[in-house]
Amino acid sequence: MKAVVFFSGKFGSTKKYAYWINERTGFPVYDINKEKPDPSKYDLIVLGSSIIASKPTIQKWLKAHWPVIENKQVLLFTVSGTEPGHPDLQKWLTDSLSQSILEKVHYVPLRGRLVLQELPWWIRLMMKVASRTEKDPQIKKRMAEGFDYMDKSSIDPILKWIDDTVEEEHLELGESQLVW
Ligand SMILES: Cc1cc2nc3c(=O)[nH]c(=O)nc-3n(C[C@H](O)[C@H](O)[C@H](O)COP(=O)(O)O)c2cc1C
Image (cartoon, rainbow, N blue to C red; front, top):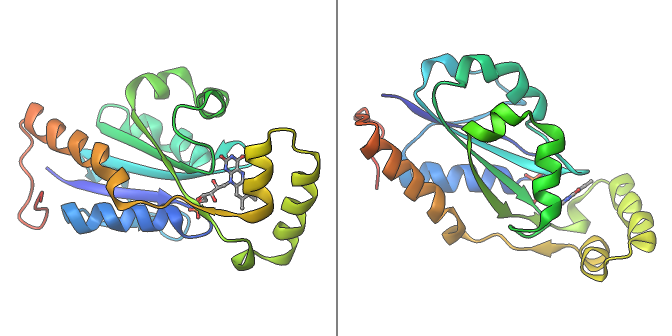
């Protein structure tokens, strides 16, 4: 069987998680905004997506490719400022992806990073303006000061799902895809 990591990110944190998964599994990684890999070649697909303006950035790609991947083993991880378990995250996913996608993919929310100094000036300005009217004090602080919640151990549930899926489905990994 063949496994892969596809990601869609804007500022580097989703990419970092994708490569941490690659380090532990050997699965190849593709940035779907730069390359056009063929998802039909794979049996197990890990999808990574940042959340920008209340939407997973992989939304368009996932909807377009869903007919090809819906019968495969698919995990979706999102990377956001909002913490896992927060109802907003669930709402953003429900609003952006169809019920059939949400029912079939295994979902793992992760937290990312935002370094204001690394953003283009106009996004920084937008954040500053938005932070003034934001009512939630935690979100306001994150927008005004940035944050860094990147943590290698937070990929553990993804590694566990891969492990369990490979075992349950009796999938045999190719030689280049060694699971830790
Ligand atoms: C313009 C912009 C909008 C964002 N919107 C949201 C949002 O709606 N909800 C949220 O939880 N995080 C939001 N974030 C935080 C990002 O999800 C977080 O920084 C994430 O790590 C970005 O992933 P990336 O580095 O792979 O692009 C936003 C960040 C930026 C720069």
